[in-house]
View 1 (cartoon, rainbow, N blue to C red):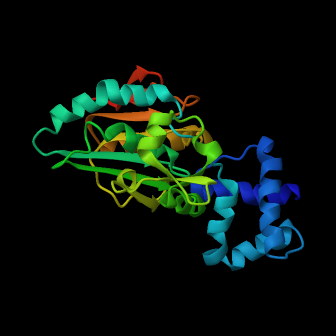
View 2 (view 1 turned 90 degrees about the vertical axis):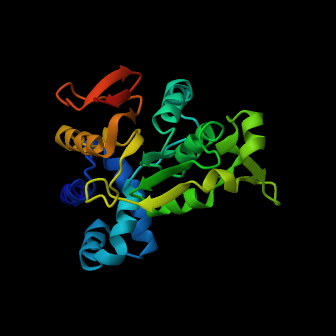
Amino acid sequence: MTDQNFINIRDQVYKSAGIVLGDHKREMVYSRLTRRIRALKLEDFTEYLHYLDSHKDEEFSHFINAITTNLTSFFRESHHFDFLTRQVIPELKKIHAVDKRVRFWSAGCSTGEEPYSIAMTLAKDLMLPGWDVKILATDLDSNVLAKAAKGIYSDSNVETIPDQIKSNWFVRNQAGDSFKIKDIAQKNIHFKRLNLLEKWPMKGPFDVIFCRNVVIYFDQPTKDELFQRYASLLRPGGYLFLGHSESMQRGVQEFEPLGHTIYQRRK
């Protein structure tokens, strides 16, 4: 991979997905795109980039899927789910006592562990008869979305889940080599492919948005714009959860920081 190849790849990824690929990501890019080059039986990166330009419709999603990183787990950053249980759920039961309409968005849902963790957390107190509770789960990568929608996970994926939660929400497959999440956890989740930099079809308002370990890949102007767009879809007093290594600049006036990467839209 030549310097110019990497610059071309870096620019296309930034333009289409807002992801910033620094020089330290060069080996990762090389490793992941080499698989596409082999699969297409091409000679090198120069030939692959020509192929990408001439086969945009069928290849570009493979290109983006190869670059994006998907690392997640059930109940990751558990303090967020503790906060949901302790503060957000009781609050939502009061706010929506009449309309009984609750909306969550898992933006960058990866292979589904996050939205399923949200569903399991909400189930006891909010997913009740007469309540309209929906979780939108979106990601740029169509491959991980397909896995998320199936809801099938290996032993290693679920090994950190307490046994009681596992028995309540998962069933062992007949072969005994994986777990399937129960339909009751899936029925309120809607998986959709979405590029966060493009136009959003949903109108909200959302009560809670999870966008964890997503904006870490964006430059500051892109982050600030994204936070403002999130604010426009959150109801006043709604919550935004970021990843443990992410933060919001003080110049973003729409949100009040609550600590532990939890932000509340100002009322």
